[in-house]
Amino acid sequence: MDNNIRCGWCGTTDLLYMRYHDEEWGVPEYDDQRLFAKLILDGAQAGLSWITILRKRENYWAAFDQFDPEKIARYDEAKIAELLQNPGIVRNRLKVQSAVKNARGYLEIMEKEGSFSTFLWGFVGGAPIQNSWRSLAEVPAETKESQAMSKALKKRGFSFVGPTIIYAFMQAVGMVNDHVVDCFRYAELRK
Image 1 (tube, helix red, strand yellow):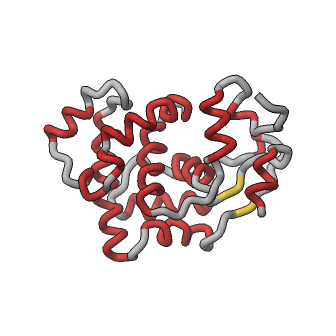
Image 2: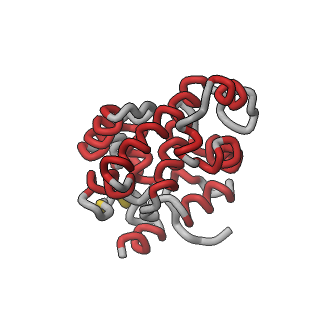
């Protein structure tokens, strides 16, 4: 443990959650496949807490072929049935099927746009939006940017990409700096 001030959502007792906050959350991610993986994981979180998915994250990487969109796009009913028997992931048929749909949408974007990253980062002008929230109560659940990204992804066949899920995704992958100003990571990520 240390004396760093953190965003209140990660608490002060779960080392996995604190490490995620300190090392990953809000750090700009530009890798196409890692962005795809994070989008699938955020969709899997719908209706659950992020710590639930964080604790299962390694299982997801293994179960979903290291989030290889080419492989996931070809999953058939037998593979979906196999995934629904895997206790290491959230066994929700709609969420598993969503991963397949989203992989197909990802491949379409890659074919037409050349980069999933460039496509997504275009919604924030290519650079992180720097917010300056004083408390978690000030942080919105969605923004005009998350609404626009959600709409564009849905148009391309994605699911579990509503504007609230998308805003959580944008926060996690550093498209917005939503660390509260007192958090030690706020200034580090503002640089």
